[in-house]
Image (cartoon, rainbow, N blue to C red; front, side):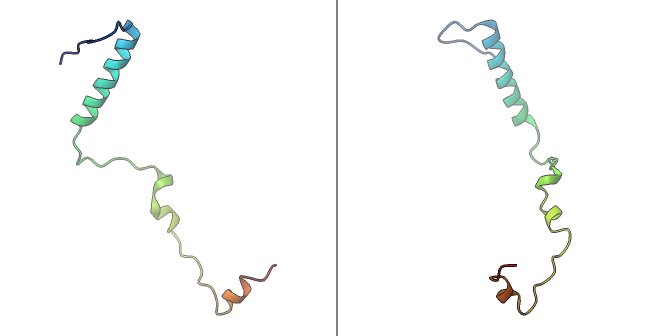
Length: 68
């Protein structure tokens, strides 16, 4: 892979940053898409639905609008 600066005069730091971005993107594309990705526990929907909530009673609709 060849990278050529067409316009401007980048500093070595700017050139290294640009090259790091290009390499990271190339590495992301090269990984197989079929690999399962690790999910964070906070984003797991089964965490929310781990237990069932009690069902409201017959008069729950009436009590929902009364304060206290």
